Length: 331
Image (cartoon, rainbow, N blue to C red; front, top):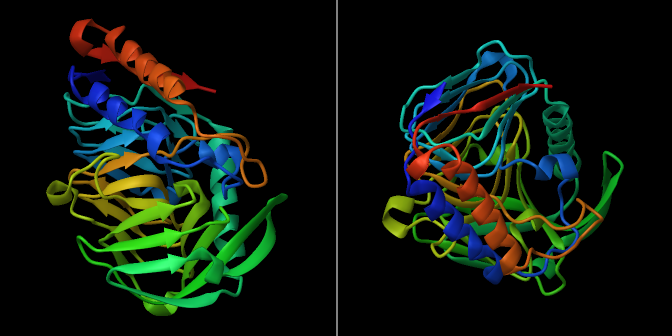
């Protein structure tokens, strides 16, 4: 599996990531387990369906469960590893010589199964909680303290969050939902199945919480969760408007088309998942353990070191990121 690598794409993505240390507040207790935090994308992969990747940048690892297949049609940048829970049956298809990454392709990875188990339980457990009704239509400002404060146990992990049940939702391109959270609590928005499919076309501004403290949770089975905030017009990266949070739909289809996302993209069920058409997905920085843990966002110097390491890895594979071979591991 050879890969022709651009000398510009990974450095640009990593430089954008450096800004995160300045713009995101201190990380408090969040909603994810350690295994789930290891991934920017988790695809259920049920029934041998496809994760389709085309013309995207993903800063983080991708985990694929079940018998899922990855079609990387490119040109794409995956600044992380690609992990499959299953053994190697040739399910990774690197279909574009201009693709950069993934840095490693790994099989029989137990952490993928653990992470998927956790996020499925996260979806069900928070989805069953009562919450304050909220309507999100166009530009909206929400005070987290108006949610219904609740504490639950997810796979042995204690989590506390302000819970909202979305009663109507319409967020178009250029529109913004602002979430203010003076207490620094987690915030959960449940989309009941009665709302039907969700088309998330706008952006999210967070004051007082991080993307890993915000869950957009699709409740029910067979509904679509689509993100398209028109990144080609409004820009991509940390300095541009972005959809922020953990986007979770384990029991239905998910797609990200021409989107700028700071957060996680988890789900897909037994249908194809699409991350295509100019999407940029930036993983929030981690600090401390999941759930009841906490910690701090990496200092700028730490993020610079990460950026340097990633670029050095790419450069080490040939001058000016010339074609190299991916590392394939079977655990």
